[in-house]
Length: 173
Image (tube, rainbow, N blue to C red; front, side, top):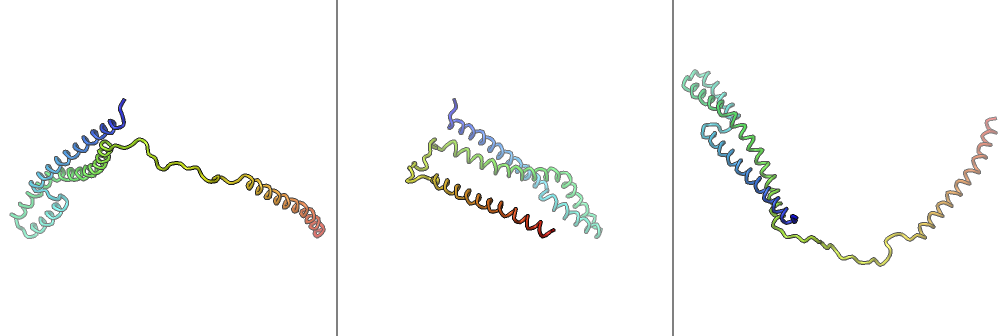
């Protein structure tokens, strides 16, 4: 039979493996992004916008050499821009996941290494000086008095209703 400490340690090993795997994947993605940056793709959206603006300026000037240089940069962006954007977005997602897994990792590490007692005594029990519940005779007295009061009200109403009805008949005739 597996005790609580062994289960906590197994859970810790599983979370640790996932944490290390995510760190390795993130390092690989960052290395790939570094390689793409060396090839000339730094921020795809901004670069594409700026190169297109500059290309329009060079076309307006009629600068053939500038147009060729910008076309070459656009080809590089076209070739490596898609993988750059995919890697960047995946890296952002994986970093969020790493943050979540790291919290679980720290929690599992504490569970596996901490020695917690199985029994917690908050406070010793003490017998109260008097009853915590209301006294029965008070409840019974209040019930009898309220019933008696309601009965008197009903009797008064019963005697008044026929008198009121008779007065109504006399006034309508």
